[in-house]
Length: 132
Length: 143
Image (cartoon, rainbow over the protein chains, first blue to last red):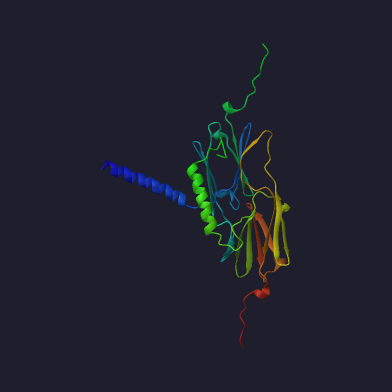
């Protein structure tokens, strides 16, 4: 009996993750650049107005969710589509050196720029060598 | 792995992505022009009154975009600058397009190229070209 319950539970979780993955979304292309002070992330999200962009940081996970909103005339029939979905989704795991409290975000012309500084203790330091 | 340290990636997510991309390539583009994708990505649609073209070109100064119609062929061209880089910066992921681009679309015969309108918003260039008056359906009165 106990085995059964466990099996059912496992199956439920499995189908839950499947459902979440089945919801199709575009994977926005990103650039990630690291310098001494932190990380800069650029993401291309064309067609997304500011209010449809959702950034979420929970523990060490950064999630970008965005919906495309284009103004289309009524009754438009698509004849060729290279962007075939209306949602972007991408998630990253952030390392512990990054300070998630101080994330700066800018969004203009469909490009998201995220600046995540490194925590104080992870900043590079120059160690003076003194002649003895 | 190609990408290291700050963004350790989930292997399953990567496999998922690969599968999804293959699926999308097969499903969504049964296209005579093949599966190759250019920059900017184009969506094209039409109504009885106009042809609508959407070019997904984020992060571009609209003044630097060249949109041209010549002999029924629409050309969208421009240049996208690479990211500003601080000294001693390391690039971990580089997927975004940078450099010059140019895409060409043959328009249907019944459009009025002189009345074309283009606007750039949220990184999407929307070009709307009305169909010419003479091509509009008309009801012919019978006397």
